[in-house]
Length: 224
Ligand code: AP5
Ligand code: MG
Ligand code: ZN
Image (tube, rainbow, N blue to C red; front, side, top):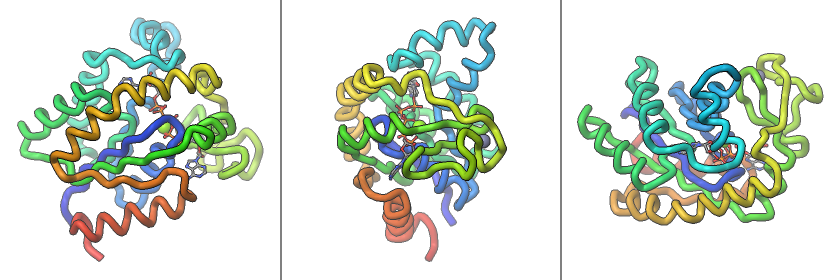
């Protein structure tokens, strides 16, 4: 098997975290979500970094590239990311995409596939309003589409489920607005590299996963 260096892009609520988690478990690669990394930092309320980040993350604004790039670079240097990874929520600006590309080239790596999940706005709103997240392990649930066995409790680790601060309708609208401002530049960048796979995120989560897997086989990224 080749190295699986993957990216998953898409609007808030498209299912990036859900798909990245399925892919990471099946292919035993780390799921690197910048949003999850930031929410981890926010748990330590007293830290200076948490105070800086809260202003952006809870309001749905982009965290400055300088902070994001430093955190991602450090994460990609971990041992567990040396034979593959799936990046979720990064890159989010053309600048981030270019930086990632440059730093991968420097270490002789490249991105095999960029999964671009599209989703309609009414679906985004419904998914995010019903989402619940584990405080402990960041697993995503939905009160209607993927509810936990016991209400408010994570199936995987028994952690408490909560609603994200940025999953309020006004903040969701702002997140989508920012996404729309940035996405074209990023898509153009990966289109040129011919590694972009566009999939409808409106589909059932299992169907999206099947489409991703068949593309991985088709492009010889994984064996049959
Ligand atoms: P981040 O955490 O990345 O949030 P996001 O991009 O807005 O995306 P979400 O996590 O809301 O959605 P998702 O696509 O992962 O959907 P999920 O699988 O959970 O970023 C948060 C913030 O951090 C940003 O606003 C910014 O401030 C900052 N940040 C992060 N990265 C940054 C960067 N690179 N640069 C600058 N700032 C950055 O699914 C949603 C719900 O739907 C769940 O309940 C799930 O169970 C359900 N669901 C999923 N798929 C399906 C399906 N197919 N059918 C039915 N239900 C489904
Ligand atoms: Mg997510
Ligand atoms: Zn959990």
